[in-house]
Image (cartoon, rainbow, N blue to C red; front, side, top):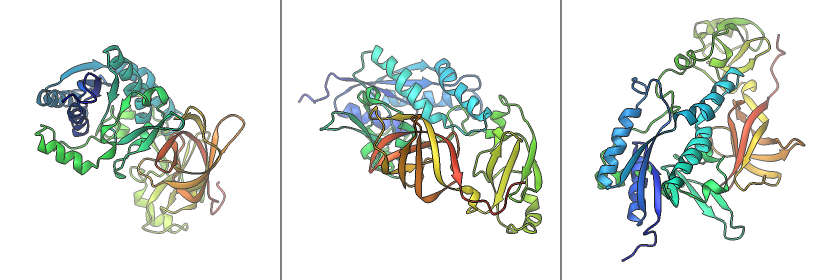
Length: 382
């Protein structure tokens, strides 16, 4: 019996992981002509203990062999360096904390990879992301929806995709839970069924983050000050810290001293502010400190899935991945940038990260956080 998808060619991004492997199997079962592509996005130290590119390709090739599909190894390292990594460094040098995975999706996986697949004659591309695409019957526009598994939903990382990209993209795992994906992989005998999920930024891998940045960004030491204005340590350079950071501050030994200045003796320290003008890192004690709570933010470089911005008014938003949707009110200024006012304070809203908007399970798009308004300080800065 001829299947509905017979004759339609789909190119799957095979990463070597279980998600993309099951994606390829599901599409083949639906009758697509499936071709795998392994994307190499980083060069230089891909044979080190921290970068598993070579191992991942071996795993991807083994999956392709089991599934009986072709696989091509494609090098996008130059595009990645120019479109993603260069921007990553610019943002860190400016004192912000970028999210390169979002830019990688928009510029590499759904642009360079998509273009390559179309040149191969593909009708669609597919990846192992936990998200869904739906064409709205009324507007005929494509919508980006959250994945059904709330613990794995990746729409946050995909919010910069536009209509042309979504119209040619399949997300077969969007309706599945991760446990089901693992079960399928085991049942069909995939060689990577039990492979651990990859974590961290693709070009950094599991290596210490500061060790990696040291190669590209010079250290510029400066004072670490608490919310009373007291100097309590020295930082190695503002680029190496992010708001809300707790580990690696080098001031754990002075907690008792901080207690005498009004902080709790055992309360941990968190990065709360970065002042580039004075090269000062401001830290506070306690997760719920007022400096870590923001009720409003401004964002620019907006990208909207429906091409046009949503109507101002009540929506929900995430200011970081895995965060629960937070009720907010959307507004705009004359420049086209948008602002969000939250019903409840949001913790450690970080410039450079993305604010992503949702209307129910529909991801509307978002922008890059430019600044956030923290709650009132307990005492003025000195």
